[in-house]
Image (cartoon, rainbow, N blue to C red; front, side, top):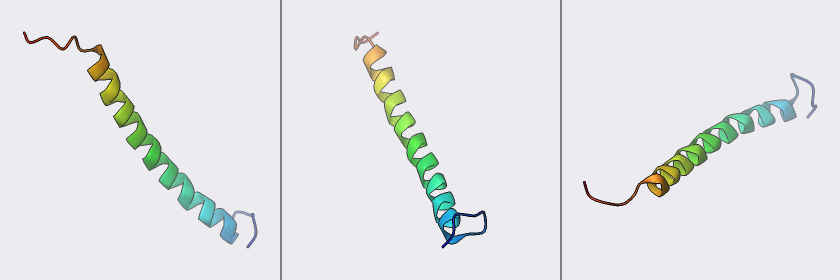
Length: 45
């Protein structure tokens, strides 16, 4: 299992990059939702 481009370790790490990107997108969506709720006045119009 080498760290070269063709090595098994690189293929494993490359898959992890995809998982990390998906997790980051989910985190951003949750934070955006929380920020939008905090910025609302909470009053009926």
